Length: 361
Image (cartoon, rainbow, N blue to C red; front, side, top):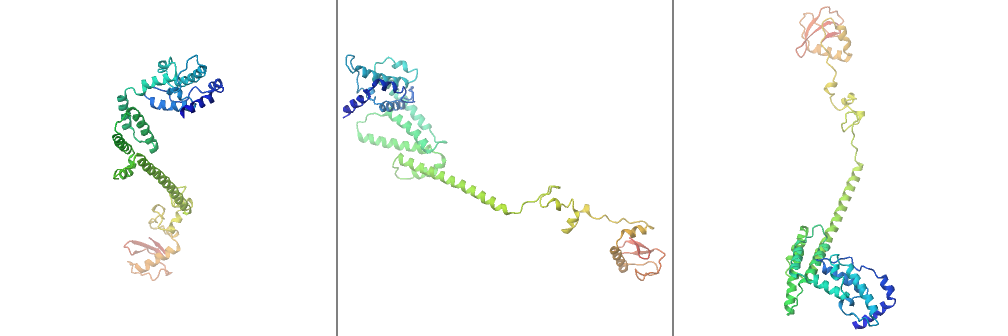
């Protein structure tokens, strides 16, 4: 069946083969072969060559023809195109090693012998060392698992020995994948400690694919909860801001720069407004009336208001202790008092009465 498919592909490509070869690209893969990436390079190049119907030129299914064969020119054209793809996909230091090979199959087999299984023990050690060094870090779970899976596939290529007993082979791979599951769980970040403990406490672990699915679901759940938490914080801040819009704004005085009042009610500028709420400040109180000397009754009389004068007269009548035998009948008594009367006030201080309606304090 495969032999019947190959001629059909060749026949389809033979029609206008010159035009087809001229339009074919020089590169079929972006990976360039070096001394350490043969596995990924060979897989990518094989896919590229297969997509263009030339796979049998590197597998040996289309051997070289004699030059006397009528189909030799067509075969040589196609084989040369595959050789161009191989040469353009290897590094510059490897190109001289295969440039003189006669067929694409010879190039492919030489590269496989040189780099495919060269130093298998050393390469297996390097791969395993890199596997144990891989940690999730800032990677997503999918990216972390893909990095491990790539290394595991490369390791399987180098250590894939032939087993004589199928049962032993199955037991080996069961143990191997269990170890790989432990490596995957150990490399996760500490935030997955809960799901990691749940998996390890199970009596049976189905497989690494099931473990990956559970961990990846936990990562998605955490992302959703983180988004919901951020939205809740934003909504709370919005509600707090909206509820504060109806509050009374804080007033600040532009004169003294204090809060709680405006400049129109600043006590420094308007001390009379402070009397409404309490006592006036000490520096705003009315100055005390100095004690004048004798003979300045007119000046003192002018400084006392009528209400204050009546209050003083009342205190005099209630607490007076007259030392002169001539008693004063009443503060309003119009009788002349030519002599100063020494009186004792309530607090024990002394003052003089110079005349009617005149009191020196």
